[in-house]
Image (cartoon, rainbow, N blue to C red; front, side):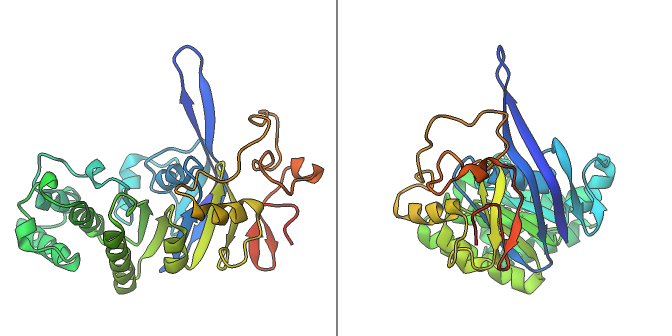
Length: 305
């Protein structure tokens, strides 16, 4: 369904001195219809940037994105709009995608209005059906975003994302700002909707337990690269970073993994980006490497067996 090849994105900052940081570096991935793929990794590893590249909110420096065989990178906005209803992003903060000046029913109706394919009566009926599907009542419709709880507003955002019957939802930390009990409710609801509608689901999360519970396949990111990918990653981690990430669950943040030693790697370094922190590194780890198949698992590590 969705395929990315060699995606790369570079952030540029600074007024006097330009600083460039590669956020996504040569990522290849494929999402199949009806599949749930979890993408995990510490803050700053490139997960959210990758999500925005997949839904075409950011233009990649290089690489290509395909949807049902059609290349989405480099095409005109007019042609791209035909596919945008099929791929929807659910962000971490629901306030980012709803207008605070609008009643939430208007926000949910907006993509239906923009499509130009429905009458006013059809739009009203579809909004009612979407609210009901997400467990929201008609009493919620005239309310404004600030009048709803975080969980209710996130359900409004999900309703909006579902309006044009997408084939793929990309959830970027969609539950991280909610209470634990509400998180479980939203995740369960997303899985039920996926089963009912046959959606593909990309679930970007810091919560490794959630990732393990909901996913068919897990991708582990570090420094903009996919370092490990497979179905039993958490039960049998092969990459040293994946093992460190699992060990870090006992701390309050996934940023607590292993301290880097000796400063940043030089720009000319083309080996493993985890080299400075890895306790298992050898000289061979200084050599460029790609994801390779190790016992049915894709791993970017020379020492994985």
